[in-house]
Length: 336
Image (cartoon, rainbow, N blue to C red; front, side, top):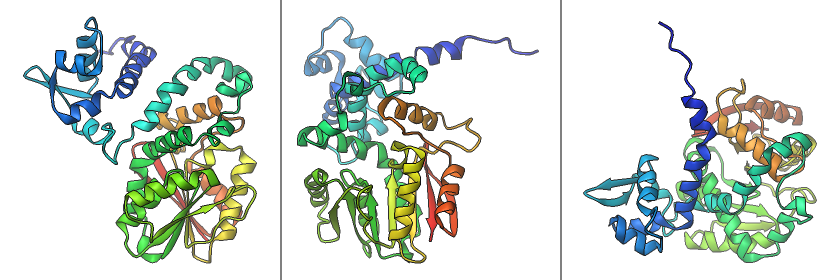
């Protein structure tokens, strides 16, 4: 017998923001950082977090049901995943991106319908503000933003350090390096490599602090610059992670051409994103990320591995391939 249609999946997706906001509030309240110190019962955890008694137990148990916490003998503790990735005291913390999503994106996504109708960004620009211009003039806010970029790229950075054949190369530069997460993972994994990060000048002190925290100053340097106004620094391998999707098609192609010009013969360009699958059916995160570009930027959009390979070939790369990294993330590799 055919199973009759059920509204369950529709309702689960339609109300998915309930679970999302519960996790985002838990990150904001530092639930996972608190429980990394020791497991706590509901009342002790409530008092430590300064929560009202009315809904605290429901909040904690919702996190258990969502797979974000464990509870044994009446005490709450982190799962292996939240222990590693949502404890603010650990270098593997990825919650910075979730903090940014909670503080900014959550409310701006409420205007998605308007964005779909107008094709215009729905963030601070609606009020005449320049979010990124203001961001780069505020060192504290910029540091928090760059930490969030480290968080969203953590898994992909680790995978690139492991999966790319780095033994064939000596130098690398991460273009649009943010805090330096990718450069650090590569250098930690491959002691023969030297490299660096290229980004706007205000990023420099934040990048250098992060690299210094891993004692890698002697092998990783910061190169200041604007990748639309200046030539890209030369290295055997250039990387662009979560960069191309910020820009319109012509700007994407311009950056790829500039990377091609900066590479030596047989040099490699690594581009990684939450690439949309070629059939545009499976990688929901990649498609939703492209909608996020609508919310945030005037011309940005995400793309498939086939799209990117075509742009690389158009720029002159003799060989391209697409490799899955982790979760929704994949990389496109071009060989000059």
